[in-house]
View 1 (tube, rainbow, N blue to C red):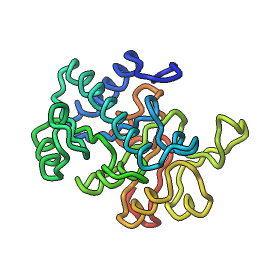
View 2: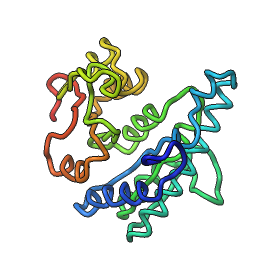
View 3: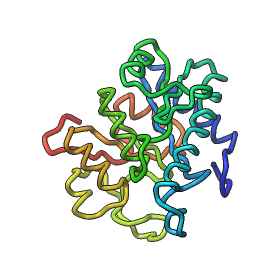
Length: 225
């Protein structure tokens, strides 16, 4: 949504597409999970009395809208992109099938996973880790609006301390809000390397792909980083 209070900002959409392209141009296979909080946030609606399952399904539909918008932005700069949705809607997106997703990646297409896991009560973070595991991703980049993981919310606490590296268990024990506990636990169980970075700093995605240590690494002790 960029600097808007809600909705889709076309300038931000174009910026994100170019940042993704910078990694894609290095012959890296790229898959993306997009959230829907700029349009509708399920947990927020549930806290105001809406049934949680209904709210989450609405949130999933919002991720499909964002995915189609990002697909359009990527294809406008010459990248073949496929949207695979966990909720069937054949007129707009392909159904999510793991082998189909891998095949698209092998053919040099960017794949966008929409509609989360297709189930309520699971966050976009959990969907990201799940899809990353299913396609055997080398690393999951969480692109956010801060530089990485802090010991408290840096937008509220100006004295918040930045954390360069941290283990999955430390994230869980310290209840850091970088990802929900289900996502962190799933990543820990499968040794998926997580890298939290600031999307708004131009070039960060390309720098990470090229091996620079940007943002925060979340890993298992002894894991290859």
